[in-house]
Structure formats: C-alpha cells, structure tokens
Amino acid sequence: MSFDRFLENGRAMILAYDQGIEHGPTDFTPKNVDPNVIMEIAEKGRFNGIVFQKGLAERYYNGKVPLILKVNGKTNIVKGDPISRQNCSVEYAVSLGAKAVGYTIYPGSIHESIMFQEFGRIQEEARKFDLAVIIWVYPRGEAVKDDTSKDIVAYAARIGLELGADAVKIKYTGDPVSFNWAVKAAGKARVLMSGGPKAPTDEIFLNQVNGVLEAGGIGLAVGRNVWQHIDPLKMSRALRALVIERKSLDEAIKIVKE
Ligand code: FBP
Image 1 (tube, rainbow, N blue to C red):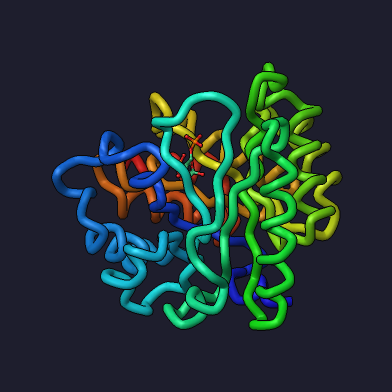
Image 2 (spheres, protein in one colour):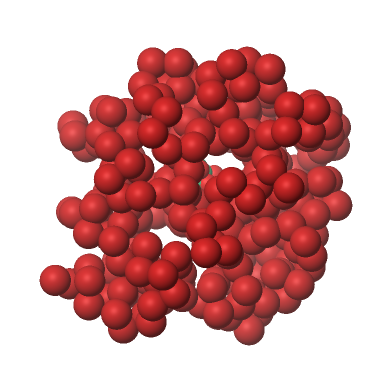
C-alpha cells in the first residue's frame, strides 16, 4: 500500500507545519516562521514526511523529505461548529511532489457530512494516483465534551478506517491501555499521534509518544513539540531513537538532555 513509503522499521515520524493556517503566526518565533527552517529540521532531523499546505509546498518544498500535502484547512477565527473544505486538488498535490494527501474532518460538527463526502471523493482520487491518504480526525462541536476520552478517540480512529484512510492522526487519550482500544478500532489503518501545544517538559511529551507506541500506534505527526523546542534537532534525535530505532523511553530522555 502506498503508505509504506512513509514507514521506516514499521514506524513513522512526520513533521506537521500547517499551523500557520490553523492558528496563525502566533505559534511561531521569528526563526520558525520561516518555512525553510522547518524544511531543514525535517531533513536534518530525518523525518519520514513533512506536512505543508499548497502555498508552502509551491515555494519552499525542496524534495528532500516525502511531502504530505494538506488539502483542506481552516482558521481559528470562525467560532462554532467547525468545517474545513478542500483548497487544493489531488492532481495539483501530485504536481507539487506529494506522496500523500492529508485532510481533517471534525466528527461531531453539524457540518461533518460535508467533510465526509468531500473526503470520500479525495480518497478515491488519491487511490488513482497511488497517493497515501492520511486523515486528521478531531471530534469537535457542541456535542463533544471530552475529545480525549477513550470512547471518542476510538470512535475517531474507527471513522478513519471506515472512510478509507491509510493512516489516522488522532489525539492521545493519556494512557496506553485506553489508547490501545483506539488502535484496535483503527484496524488496518495505521495510527499516528497528534501533538498539541508544546508539553511542559520533554519527559511528558516523550512519555506520551512512548504510550502511543506501547499501545500499538506506529508513530506521530506533530509540529509544535519539535519546532518550538529550544533544540529541534535534539528532540528529533530523541524521537528517532524512541520511534524508529525502538530504544527505551529512558534512552530517549537521555538524548534530549545531553
Ligand atoms: P501540533 O503537533 O503542533 O499540535 O500539530 C498537529 C496538528 O494536527 C497540525 O497538523 C494542525 O495544524 C494542528 O494540530 C491543529 O490543531 P487544533 O485543530 O487542535 O487547533
């Protein structure tokens, strides 16, 4: 299957950089606001993929790391039940060098059916081009009270499988036992952890990643915990040790503290 090209030793570490549209430049420093800096972290940090929106891919993608083209996005300016619509065709993603497309759906939003339908079309087009399909599944909206509960995260994972994604990017529940239910629900779809705001300490973040791996997840697709780190390449090395080289949590923590 086309997602295999993102795997190394059965695992994957993917660098996400679509926060500029989702949150605005508030996430950035004068350094990491420059997409070239992120491209370099992805390359030197030996990530298995980088996530860009179309505009960044056109101007900054250098082909050194497999590209995952995010084909929808929204801002956080609009309030209420979220909806995120397609902003780039699959064909254009291919022309930019993408090896996968990414799409976010918000189950629980009153607009979920629009996103489900749109994703369905994108998924089928991606198959024609032999592109992998990664779905960000973020339960949101009035009805969603706790988006990291065991049941809602497992539901998110299952939706990704049912809709035909090769990999689902979901939030961590907080412990490996409950997260394992999401991994089971995802079936043959691979499970990637979504990052969230920078964790208070490196230990906390690496512990979360370790929990995901223990639960059967194959890795992570995160941004802020890497490129907001004081030493992004050091964090990348720690992640590589833990995720790809299957070293212990203690060894990964040692690397980041070196
Ligand atoms: P982070 O690791 O920085 O949280 O990135 C993961 C991600 O899914 C991004 O791809 C996306 O831009 C962002 O989170 C969306 O965050 P949210 O919808 O929670 O504000």
